[in-house]
Image: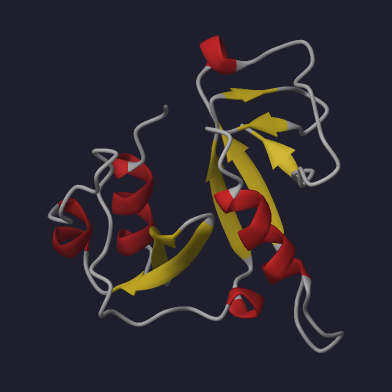
Length: 134
């Protein structure tokens, strides 16, 4: 997967509000606010060896999010992605898209390396289509 440290550095340098994911249980993920780059760079590793924010942090309401950068195992130009098969991001995206008309547009951008690009990624009914891929 693509390393996100340069993205985090730029987001903090630009004064953006930054959130990072944490798996909360079977098939469930939340995004937690992160106050500083150093905090994000020193997250403890999960059982999957992925850095995660502590569970006692500030959880973001999914409908307050305007941009979500989504990791992928594989991506295609049709904006489909394949993750690790647990559905964490698909469920989170569905929750974030359940926003009222008073909320701004929510964008999802899949991130991957050129080696992760496929001609076509298989898609199932529960898979959320992305707004773009990089």
